Length: 290
Image 1 (cartoon, rainbow, N blue to C red):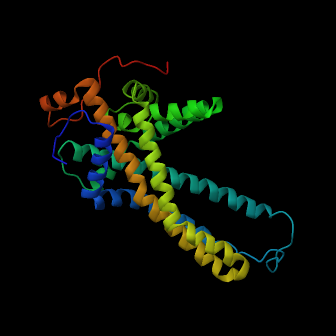
Image 2: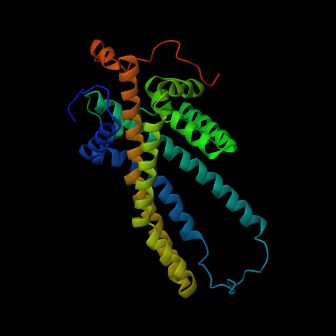
């Protein structure tokens, strides 16, 4: 992709530019996605190694009485679930934010590294968490109405993360900004989401599903090896997530810049200020969520 090729793109060109960016900077995006995901993998493997070996149906582990788990086990499980959620959120936010910053630098003709991209997330975790939470609540609220409104809202909010990070907007402002940018472009966002889901499930089927099936079979035939196969399936899930997750974030950032070029002449703004940060959008953007 030529540097500073800022112009309106068709949907095919957005996807082509996404794959080109990913392919030419594969190790950069892989590293940004993998480092936070390693936290999740380490936690899952630790849980698997410390859990009881699955027993044959009808067989009870020695020394364990039937019935409900003890209060200690329940408390341990609750604490583990909370720790898992915190680790997942931290990994997700760092991966998303680092990838957006990397795409922005590369898209605007600047070089970057894994450390620099992830380092820019310092001080941004709280804001990005608010954006992610509000985005999720808005989509869930729309899904409560019907499936189609939920999908539509998700497509309209697809650029809220790039808007929040690259324009330094708060949670509500970033969602309003995304609604303004994606007006009349929900269909293109839907295709991006659809392609991501296809790639994700293909990767899960390839790297995780076979080992999960074997783990289920071994839990009946040879419980002592089931834990090993479960750990392998978790590693497969890590590989699938690490490989596919950057696609959606890269496509979202490219789509964000394309919308700004189309609607705000961002290419001209950047030509007048090539060394500065990405200029923000037009003042008084419609507050469609107000």
